[in-house]
Amino acid sequence: MSRLQVPQWVKSVFDTFPLSTYEATPLGDHSDIEKSRFYFISDDPEKAPDHNFILGVDGVIGVNSKIIPSTPVALAHSLILCYKNGLKLPRENSKSKTSPHSILSLSYLAASNNELPIIIETNERTQVRNTIPKKGLLASIVTNNNFESDPKAKLINSMVDSCIQDLWILTLICDPQGKNKYERIFNWNAGAKKSGNMTFLQTLAVQEEIPEWNDIRTRNPNLFPGKIWNALDQEALQIVYQDKLKQFEQELPLLIEYATGHDPLTKIISFKLVALAILANEILPETGLANLVQQHQNFVTQCYNIIDEY
Image 1 (cartoon, one colour):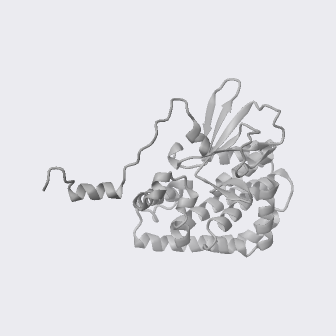
Image 2 (cartoon, rainbow, N blue to C red; image 1 turned 180 degrees about the vertical axis):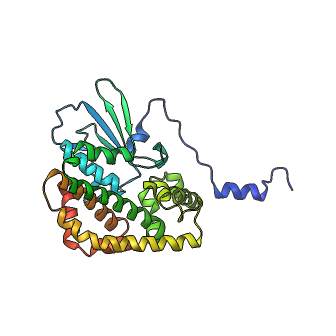
Image 3 (cartoon, rainbow, N blue to C red; image 1 turned 90 degrees about the vertical axis):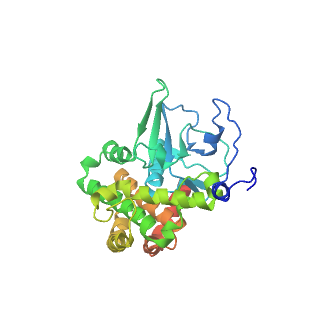
């Protein structure tokens, strides 16, 4: 072997994980961050807020010329933020900045518990920054909107939170069509998207992390005895997934009817159903979850009207 010849095993490693060269980024340059940041539109751009917030999400997609988060909890929260703060969703290809509030596409590793969305709040006067994790966001919706005053609304809100999260997560790990959509949902960098091997590794990493979300592994330890589930686990997961779908099929018409109210608490619950319906239809159109949602076409149309409204 020539001294200058690269051993085949070394060459195969570099072919599998090709090196990339990145240009130097000047200190203080936030241009790369800004590429993943999308600003809400303010109804009153002249009014300077006391606080500004960043909604950190797994990824974003475009729907009806709007930029929306790619997961139901994040989309629901963005709609609630719009409703409570007089904002509109970011627009595709818009360069205008009428508010300091934004959606930022992040890796789930940016969250303290590897679960997005998060809110990063900054007090403009003191410049003190506070990060609120996903569980804190869900709890703050109940506290800040006085759900305690309406036990029925509080119960339905809790049921919707649990149902939406569990169904979304189970669709991603059980439904073959759900597994094929990870690249569209999550914020994977350009290097990973260019390499089939890196995409495969990213997919494995996400599959290992998803069962931790919404405490599904903790609540169902028998389904996830290890970090990677075997065929027997997958069979048990399918049973749970199908049971959840059947339960949702029975509950969805009642939830849709309830969500037609116009009081603030009902409005918040409706945003959560809208988020699930829109993203099931847009990202997971051939899954069991989407098939259930698509049986209620009038409701789906109303969901798109709400996206248009904001």
